[in-house]
Length: 171
Image (cartoon, rainbow, N blue to C red):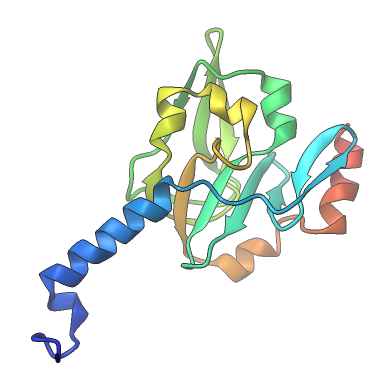
């Protein structure tokens, strides 16, 4: 059967609902961790990119990126009491404040590792911010972003051996 909208998906209510449901499923599924690498006593994930502000970027199959705090930041800060995340639709700029971490009356601004528009938030970490400490790379992700300048932004991030060497100097 041919599509009644002549394959013009942008005008099809069914397709739009299907895409929204697909986004919701993808948003709530934590990334699969392939392999951890331990450097200076801290966990790093081999196929993630790292920002010097101790946040990470994972590029997903759909072109969006998932971001969060790295193991170093979660252990140095300790367990969060609350997170202040930007609402969906907000544009982030790499190196500028992306969200905040609150603990014992203190607030720490966390730098965004990437530029782009926030497309979804991890509601689980809003309800229980300790997840960011307990599982920073899978369940502790904080948001998904539609990157605006991915290729350029990745040049400012650590990857592979470079991130292991960087973590050694942070310790």
